[in-house]
Length: 467
Image (tube, rainbow, N blue to C red; front, side, top):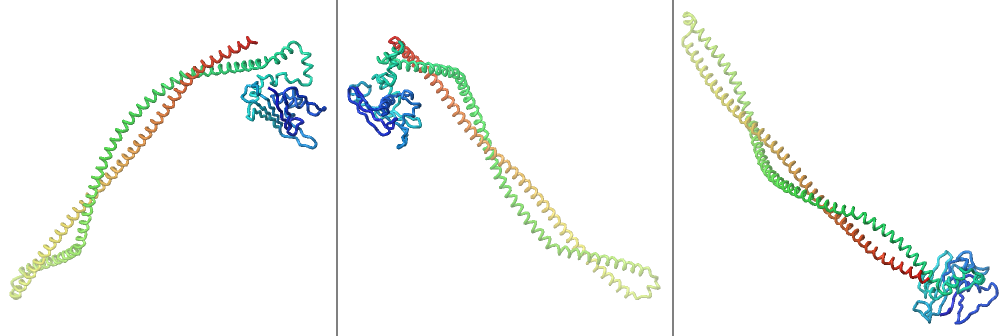
């Protein structure tokens, strides 16, 4: 394994892309002061993962980017790629040639690549650690470092010897394993806390789940009982509704019959009123005739009284006075008076009979009118009662329909509540099963983590023994 080439672009004084090619053996870089010889070594250190700006002879990491000159503006990034010949397989990668690249942007971002694939700094460090050319391996001796090696104390020399012998990478791995063990302990403690908390919560959750299942069963029984009661009520209401509808139909028929009877009574009343209007002139004529006959009867009675008075006076006249008149004249006058009396009696009897007939006919008409009025009032009263009963039945039908609609809505609401309760019970059961599975998984994970912890502890013990 040997370095094959290194390309610098925008790194310190190398503004343009510069490629240095190395051959097996020793390669010397010669030049005057300030020509950038040390920058080549800094680039080699930087591309292998150096993170300290002071090790690169700078104040901050952005100083490695070309800062510009009077005739050339500064660049926005620095890039160095190192190509290593791995034909002997010294690097643990299946490539005969490995190119490591690092790019630094002025905003502080960095990118690392191995053979063009983006990677992490840790990947590069692990790749180079087994070859002995890592950034912390003392294969690069910079300015002033030789004096520190020569004047180092025993502990410092031990550190240099360990780095040269390759113990440093094992120490780094040991430190990494220790950090992982500490993180594992922290994770185990956190998982143990979580497990204890979940176990503590599992019992109340189990009780809650049991209570929820019991409550779901009770609610289901309650809903079933309510549904059965509502079903019975619904059947009863439907029967009552059917009976009300039948009664309504019967009442409608009775109403139609009553309306027909009312129409017939009204028609008959109209006919009677028409007959009354037709008989009114005759009644008035009969009344007029009765008045005339009454007057005539008075006159007849007056004439009769006069005639009786005359007869009385005639019979009471002395003989000598009676002898003064002619008997024939008296006879004729008496016959004439008798004829007038007979005529007046006949006329009076006829008038009285006509009056009696008229009065009787009028009384009959008035009785018929009273009867029809009573029938009309009865029919109107019956019709009003039937209308009131019909309205009452209509209200009962509406109330029954409202109760039926309310029952249907209650049934739908109870069905929805039942479905929601079932969903909540299913969710609670799933949460309970999930928590139980999680606790079981945590128990299994505890066993696996304890095994990994024991394996790590044994590896640490072996590393300590090897050290």
